[in-house]
Image (cartoon, rainbow, N blue to C red; front, side, top):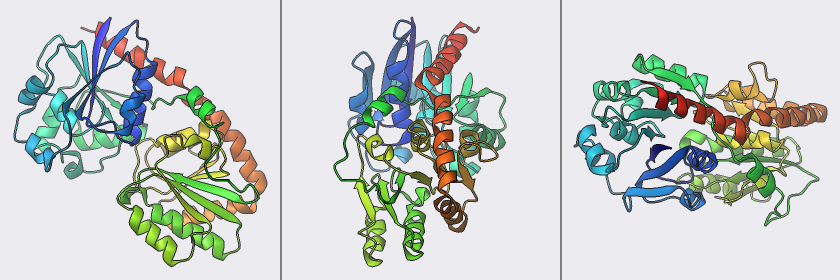
Length: 373
């Protein structure tokens, strides 16, 4: 049996955290002895880990300037102090702090893997959790394998670091059966089926640009479209977004649902899922929408063309601006047959991201790496 450690900063409400839980819960426990270790013992996704998964954390809670404090110590020192057991494979499931720590593993018997979830775009962003770019490049060079969640994320990483590691693409793991089952549950608030129902899902942060969704909703209402829009998620931008909705008298048709442990019961009842982000890795909520047969309209961010097709075969990818996104949504609302077409295509595309396919791809990679010399 292969002893494997997955390390991530925390198990909060982010996409990568959710994907990690989905992955380890569905891996073959007769082949893998799995431990999940977090830097900080926080996050709503922790409770979803299967009991058979070993869990540990380095610190009970976050502390001020933790990124800067960790940089005072070398990766080798941090690994030795924080990772006390021996493993066959150690994985940093995110770029950044845990990538720096796991790179400090010096055992010749242990293979190292680093997952990259987002486009980092430039040296400054990519080296934020490291002392400098030189250290970041040195740390990433120590990994036997780099895994990106999309081809565009891979290309971005290779452009920044230009290192010769074995670098592959593996798509995120979703709990397909669980998603479909949870979608059947009743919602706490009634969804008006006489209207076109639109949703956005994610942490309410600046990069997600949910202000675009509100402004697009406002334009739709002002132009006579019979729509309701629901925003699922929580975060630092919530107060700012709520103030705009109140100021512009949109409360009756734009609803904040907060973080939902089961977002699928809402998403499944929507006519359209919209991603407004300026940057993504491989948007988990968009993938889940496809699995539920909900058409997706998105800005051009990492992974979306791979997900929806380079010619809008399975959904619509627009330029990364508010006007293009609005026009694409209006076109769908004006052509119900097109909306129906993309609903059927969503179901079809969702099958590509089934739990079985994505987990087996990861397991094959891990088994091959363990056997390699």
